[in-house]
Picture 1 (cartoon, rainbow, N blue to C red):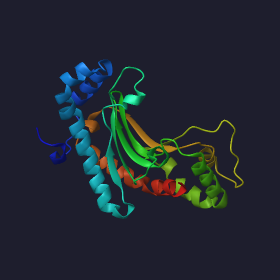
Picture 2: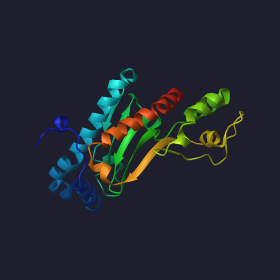
Picture 3: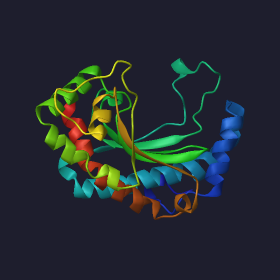
Length: 227
């Protein structure tokens, strides 16, 4: 079998989806060991190829950012396996700057699960201080932030998501309704979710991710500047 490092992404296959569902319903070592070749061929190899291709193209254009690329492992951390399921039925890759605390630093990601796929940019869980920095930045210069987010309602690829504070945060600046929604979040991301379809099975998926990440780059830069 070819190394994933030498494989060009040509799209996922129905075998990819079948493997994920099989692992979800048979999440145990005997089943996984029996189907490990399927995992490598149908799931890990195309995911790695997609991540490397997208990372390479983004790095070529945004080399000064110093991005790195990470691919998730199928094995769950043994210290956190409390449900008897040692494997992940989903995989993802990320493009990010090196950080000791990736959960509180913004990342670009792509994730594939048995149910759907998603990609975008944002925080897994921003720190309270990061969001305090964000609110102070908006209060100081609301027009800059309003200009930054103005393109989002005009496109239909990404939606804004994030958990809000129970007690609403009130800006000292006069904000639009859209900006006020951002202001009251504990963390946020811009995300696209889709059910499995033809694009997932096509090499053109990499083009969509690259185009999406390029659109999101100003938001990544803004998010990162808050950390």
